Image (cartoon, rainbow, N blue to C red; front, side, top):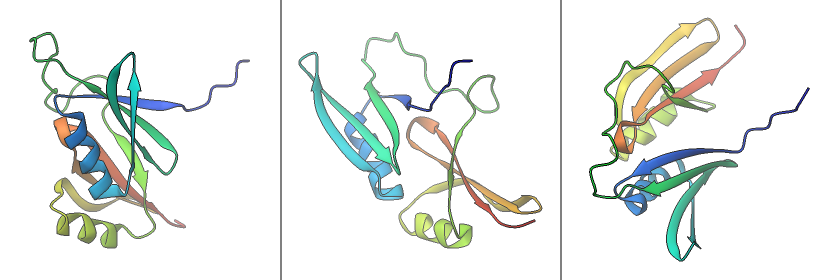
Length: 129
């Protein structure tokens, strides 16, 4: 059987630079600026996770972000060692939470942050159940 390895996520943004700066501010993401096919490109990395950010053209061909709940990819998750500390830090930076910290089940606490273009980001703290 083929072995599948995680490679990247791909986001679309009307302002990739501002989106990249948000991920840098909130999560300490590394911003990567390159040129591809003669055009500037901005991507970010969070602990080895590559997030490609594509420029949305103002031509009306790209749909707006969906309103949750919806079918398809719902969110991505970032694990933290101390959820309460992470939430306090992100709130101090101006992050908007769509779900405050809660116990999802024994050994798992979660919270959700709204990212640029309404991307839903789960923060999760795992401990021995």
